[in-house]
Amino acid sequence: MNIAHLLDRAAQHAPERTALYLGARPLRTYRQLRDRVAAIAQALGDRGCQPGDRIALFLGNRPEYLELVLAAWWAGLVVVPINVKLHPEEAAFILTDAQARLLVTDQAHADEMRAVLDGDRSGLDLLVADSQDYDQLLRTGSAATKPCASVTVTDVAWLFYTSGTTGRPKGVMLAHRQLMAMIMCYHAQVDAVGPDDRTLYAAPMSHGAGIYSGVFLLNGSGHVFPPSGGFDEAEVCDIARTLGRVSLFAAPTMVNRLVRHVERTGAPVKETGAFKTITYGGGPMYVHDLIRARQVMGDCFVQIYGQGESPMTITTLSRADIADDGHPRWLERIGSVGKPFAMCDVAVVDATGKPVPPGVTGEVVVRGDTVMLGYWRNPEATAATIRDGWLWTGDLGSLDEDGYLTLKDRSKDVIISGGSNIYPREVEEVLLRHDGVAEVSVIGRPDPEWGEAVVACVVLRDPSVDADELDSFCRQHIARFKRPKEYHFLDALPKNNYGKVLKRKLREGIAK
Image (cartoon, rainbow, N blue to C red; front, side, top):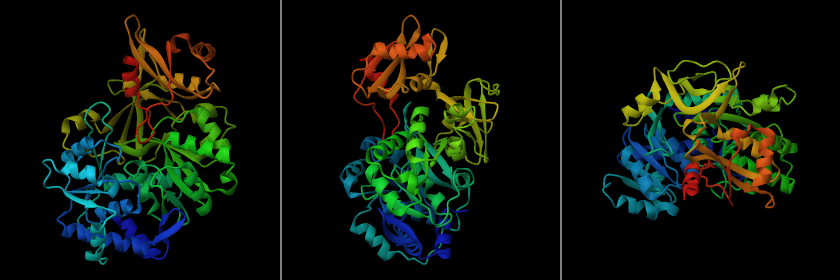
């Protein structure tokens, strides 16, 4: 099964239905999108790309991005999405490691990418999407071609490189099978997507938003690109109000920005149903923030938990669970990441791989068709991460008696002080309940007596709040040994392009 068949079938079923929007303006029908994708796919073949070759994408969110992803799959190629916020040297490592045959970029990044290609990658071809060269592909290719018939479900479709926070990034191999499993997981347990629905690409397409594109091909839904090419809360809100039934994937930080905008402007998104589904993930959504988001925007939220090695597909906290505020354990449940998707097995185990009892913290493991094939050209890392068919996620969590998974932290982020494990998120949840705190991230620093000490990095909403007040607040809500020993007040928390807080940078800053 080639994922590109989803586009072909949608175009056959409803050729005149709008497939692409630029803002609220219809841009292309499904017939036009299919014909362009088929032409680009053939032209890529004429340019020397063969099934199995890697095509790297280093460009912002724009309609050509989706066309190129689909054209690559149509031609039997492997997509290598690269975060445009990466340094050129970081991008160069990925290009070399992936042995990319073609790099596609845009005018905004063309010069820096040409500088990368001036090195020893003479075999790598370059294409600029918003240029005459791209238009030439459309003129020379044929719209009569069909999706590559030689592709099987086990052929790699998406080669996603991890963030590399603990070393060089690794290429996660996801085949058409993994992507189709992810699509079915969404339709079965996140939201039943129909032809009148639309997805808005406000988060980077090199990450979750891009990989979710197949979800909205299955029944010929609309694909919306914001004219800004990124996330602007006012723009997103205006587009959703104009089109209606808009869904999007967003990091929790994006959700919080959108909520603040709706609060400030009074935009009637809750009353009009402008947003059908906002799927959030990629970082912790704190209970306080989720309650506020629901009050402001209604019951449009669903959480997913996954990672590059099993993307968007480990657990989900359903819309119904988030809305069930009469349940006696509601607060506990909305602090979880929900229940496992039906297409995978999830367990919490100790260091030997033995499942731990309900309520006990261990490492989260997952197996099933959602899990990666392995790491690209890295059998050692693959063997260390996938053991006896189980993917060891590196995340610590616990399952309750009803099967809800609550994440504690990444194993590398746990603070061990005086022999006791302290989970930063638990401390963060408490501090965020203080009205004067806007954002917080808790880290550990070396301590000669206790091993590690708890440090809170805080962004204040009320500048009159000080460390003594926060310490007193913590004493009221958590055990004394868990409370921060230091407070560092910052103007902003360092984050990556996906909105994740960079704790490594915080640790580096505290060490200075």
